[in-house]
Amino acid sequence: MLNRRKFFALTAPLALTGNRLMAAAQNAPLGAPHPAPPVRGAANLPIVVSTWDFGQAANAEAWKILNAGGWSLDAVEAGVKVPEADPNNTTVGLGGFPDRDGRVTLDACIMEGNGNCGSVGALEHVVHAISVARRVMEKTPHVMLVGDGATQFALEQGFPKENLLTPTSEKAWKEWLKTSHYQPVINIENQSYHKQPPMPGGPGNHDTIGMVAIDAKGRVSGACTTSGMAFKLHGRVGDSPIIGAGLFVDDEVGAATSTGVGEEVIRICGSHLVVELMRQGRSPQQACEEAVKRIVQKGPERAKTLQVGFLAINNQGDIGAYALQKGFTYSVRTGSVDQVYPSPYYYQ
Ligand code: GLY
Image 1: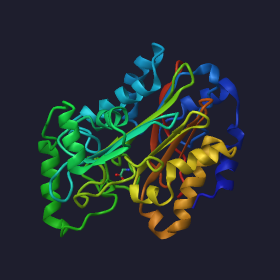
Image 2 (image 1 turned 180 degrees about the vertical axis):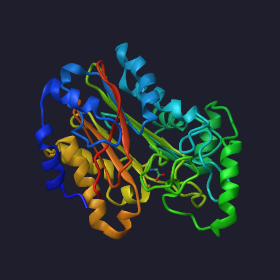
Image 3 (image 1 turned 30 degrees about the vertical axis):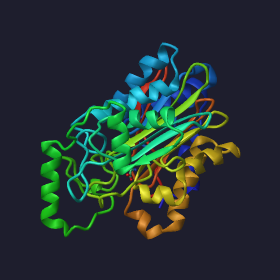
Image 4 (image 1 turned 60 degrees about the horizontal axis):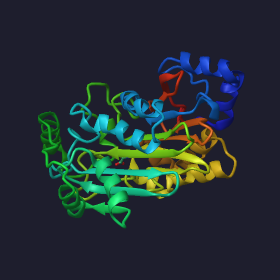
């Protein structure tokens, strides 16, 4: 087990400042000991960070808006639409693995630093769940729409109705049905229909995209979108559309988002916890570590079998990331950095 003392002992010699720290972080290959997340100052805004390596392509899209002086809310929406539209990403949007009954249901939320937010849970037939969530925020007096109501709203708003079940995802679901006994398997993505070995937290364990960004004017925004746990019970909703669980944003503090088994994140109101810990003076890194530790405290045996990762930035652009298991990565884009980093993790 990683204890924090050991982690800090390992990383203390690397507690560099400024450019040296940035250089150390940039040079760390995936899987290598992680020196520390890069530290950014407000002078270096804008910044966008996303969960997982596929966040890099999403960041590139968000960066077009941030670099042109645009609003972080527009940037995060545009960014996460990239994996939503990718049929080869089996955990987000089009091509996401279906539920137990073969239905692809999407969860997403979006939030501004002033508390405005919108969300959809168990949305069907619409690729860009994040844009529907934004429409809920902007066009209704509500925060969250779910199930048939969310789908009805999206279609009324003019979003095209599409089949989200790709041949690849349908094949995986049919394979799963042969052995599943209709028991939804927690963290099935770890066990894996990906090409990589089915290791907890392994490279095949790509999951939710959570993205948080600060624009040149210092406005913080976040977006989170997923097809959720593969082969889940129909109607299951994870952490990703739950404001405070999968995402929380506050201009006064910063933002946090999560990936992994949503049930564990919901139990601790994970992203809200991270932001509130930062408000109390913790660094983004310390706050992410504390949130992961809470999950371990609630169920150490269960936590060993699961993956959860948190990613946070404070409103100065400092970054933190921490996961239960090896394998969580995150992507950072600023004026001088376009890089994927391995996250430090609890269980060694
Ligand atoms: N974190 C995604 C989910 O549990 O649905």
